[in-house]
Image (cartoon, rainbow, N blue to C red; front, side):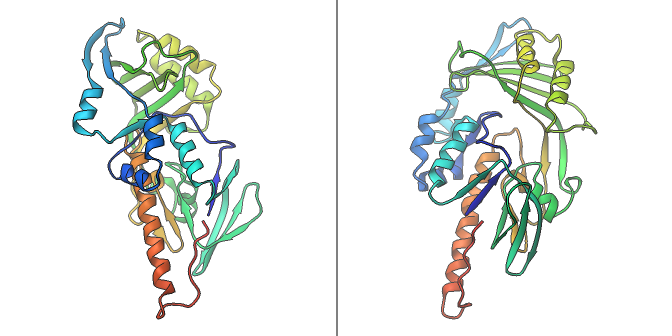
Length: 308
């Protein structure tokens, strides 16, 4: 199996993510559930603030989680990526700092060219490249056919220093805008969400544009937001994207398939990682069953062995 990642290293930016329900079962089958729990964020509570930073209400997250969803885990995105990569290192060839440029397929495989690497041919190609999937664009059609703006934009950025209130999340909610501080394993994370119609010229890769939008949108709303915006202005890496829904009627075309947010994005609402993990398990199970059928006496004599 070959995994191609555009980033030159495992990405660490973005909000903490959840591993819930069926994804926990998959993690247990992979023997990584213990490692995920050890790295999980133990959020104790969420304090709701007024613009002066005074607490007006508090939710006991720890009690709520233990009584309703005791197996669910919240984990930093970078920690999840690292644990999954380490678990698959012996079975996958990781190519970092590259991306698919073109692809063509026929009944026996997919020919792929890359931005940097030599062209290669694969038995199967899985696009697990997120909301802005290149594989979906090349094999299925333009983003405008499948991606629907949900009316929100979200951003996160790590703050310097360590968290003074480990285990407590703070949230300031003003009309159409929300700013929050998440402890995230002792490394504080500033979180921005705001309502806005789709921005026609929005470029999810343009860091300077993101800085201008946040500075304009969150100026003067109080609490520690000026401090957060100072961090934004000096940032070299920051997650910023629209909240969107991806609706693809069929997730496979020939030997090309979509997985995770590329096929069924539910960004911001916590289930993206769970759907991706559970979906990858179901896909692997289907491929194993297909391979077994092909190995049966009545099947084609040459077994089908996916390499990507």
